[in-house]
Image (tube, rainbow, N blue to C red; front, top):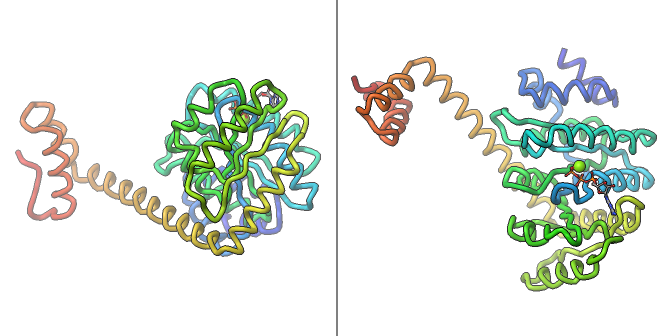
Length: 321
Ligand SMILES: Nc1nc2c(ncn2[C@@H]2O[C@H](COP(=O)(O)OP(=O)(O)OP(=O)(O)O)[C@@H](O)[C@H]2O)c(=O)[nH]1
Ligand SMILES: [Mg+2]
């Protein structure tokens, strides 16, 4: 079944892509098998992570960027990543419907993802989804996520180019700086530039960025009005310029290696944890130690130590009676 689905995926069958995305997102063995098989067909797509506070206009901007890339002859996919809060479920669904409406004429594939509960992080699932879209033939993949926490920062860092969105008059700017987003952007965008305070925020951003040590790539600050499309073409120009810079400087290859390294390590973590938990469940160690802590015979630290001892030297240390 997987083989047939993959063949269809590689031929550009949208239903096969949708099905494989679900299999991967749900962590099924078929999904994992598919990822192994498609790997050699990936690595070509240009990826962009777009992050910003709730309501800053990410979805509107992403739709506009997608259309502009489409006009430039590129095949585009969009992934909207769930910021893993139960309160945003409705918003996410609304987003997806809106984006699909915006993009439907241009054959832009839109997918929202909520990988909450899976062992792997959001970033890993996003990377897997990007791999599927890449193998499917998408040349540009846009990833939207709320820049609220570590998970989300990890998501945008799984892409080639990070676009950080700010809006005037919301105090977001301070929040974003606190959240460390001033260090991760390759391009900064002041969206809602039709609003009061946009020039001030733009100036402030330029100032903050100018304080950072000069690098080979100095992040530009751009102004957009996502609702009208103003400033979108220069933004897409900047994204393409960044890709060119990465390719010509060799930094892209280094970044790519770093992402692969991170991905492999987090897979090791995931698999190690899965394996460990399965063994603990099978041999009853966990429960007997939890009982000992509950009875006050042992403290949690010692229980954890005993579990590790038990895993690495099972013959020497059995749970105490
Ligand atoms: N005035 C103005 N409104 C905008 C602009 N861009 C987006 N909006 C509006 O801002 C609201 C939020 O836009 P979204 O694109 O849904 O924002 P988002 O960041 O994706 O929101 P979440 O995914 O819920 O975090 C919508 O009502 C948009 O029409 C802009 O440049 N100017
Ligand atoms: Mg959105």
